[in-house]
Length: 436
Image 1 (cartoon, rainbow, N blue to C red):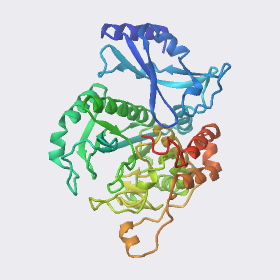
Image 2: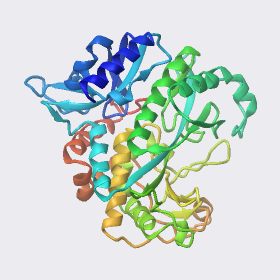
Image 3: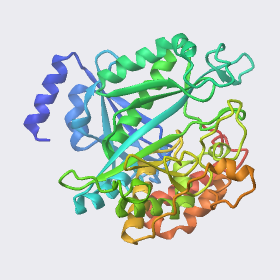
Image 4: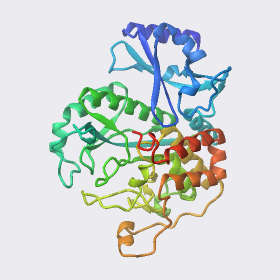
C-alpha cells in the first residue's frame, strides 16, 4: 500500500468514527491474540509492525533478548474493517516478523509459503470451512455443561426448539458476521446437545483462514454477551459427538478452470484431484498431529457410541464418493478433508494439507480405491478395514516426526516448535492437555 492510499484509509476510518485498531495475530495453538493501538499509530504498525514480546507468545521460539526477541505484527491494510462489537474500533490481521524478516514460526507465514508454491503454477486453492462448536456454561460445581439446560433430545440434530431458544446468540452472529463481510449460508443445531454449526461462503485459502479466525473472535465475544462460552473443544462430552472443522478444497488454474473435478473420473475427481487425495491419505498420520492437535482430539477420532446414535468422525484412512465415514470425501468435484477439528491452528492445518496434496500430485501417487461401504458397519461386522489413524496425540506426533518430507515442506522450524509444545501436552498432568 502506498503512503497516499494509507492516508486515504486513515481518513476513511476516522470519518467512520474509528479511533483504535485491534491488531491480531495467531499463536501456535490457533488462538487469536493482539493489542489495541491508536489509529494515528497505524502507519508504523503497517511498515514496522505492532511490537509484542516474542517469548510471551506460544510457539515463536524467539529469545528473551536481542533484535529477534520482538515479535512484530505487521498490519495488512487490506484486512482493516470496523469491528462491530466495539464502538470506534477497527480490526486488522497481522503477519509475523522478527529482525525485519518473515518469522518461520508464524503460522500465517507458513501458509503463505505454501500458497507461493501454488502461485508459481498459476493455481489457486479455494477453501470452504465448516465450523462446529459448543455453547457451554459453568455449573455450580465448576464443570462445563450445555449452556441451554432444555437442550436434552436424544437426537438433537436440526432441533428448531433449541434454535428458537438460542436465537439471540444466532441472530447476533448473523448481524455481526454480515457486517464483517461474511456471506452466510446456514445455521443449524448439530448432532450433540449444545452443538451448532454456522456455514458461510468459501474463499481463497488465505482469506478463508483469516475469516475463520475472525469467526472465532466474533463467536467468543457474542457468546460472552449472552452468558455463554464458545467452545472449540473437539470432544467436550464423552457420550456425544465431537466438533469437526471440515475443509472443502478445490483448485483452479489461472483461467479459473477447475483442476480437481471430472464427472467421468473415479469419485468425480480428475487425475489431479485423485492424486491430491492420495497425498492426504499418504501423509495422514503426520497431518493428524497438526489438524487434530489436542489430547481430546483422539477421543473424537475413535470408534465410539454416541447418545444420538450417529457419529461422522473419520477413523480410517479411506476415500469415498459422498461417503462421510471416510477421511476423504469427494463431493461435487471437490475434496472434503474431514480430519481437522475445531481446535486446530487453521493456517498450519491448511498449509500442511496443501503440502500433502501437492506431494501427491508431484509424486504421481496412484488414485485411492473408492470405498463404497459404511465403514462403521463394516467394522461392526468384523470385515477387513483400511489403515487406522493414530490412536492418540503422542502417536500422531510420532507420525509427524517420522514424516521428513512433510516436515520439510511445511517448515522444520515451525514443526520443531509444534512438536516440542505438543509433546508437553501429552503429559496428563499438563495444564495444556485439555486446553480450550
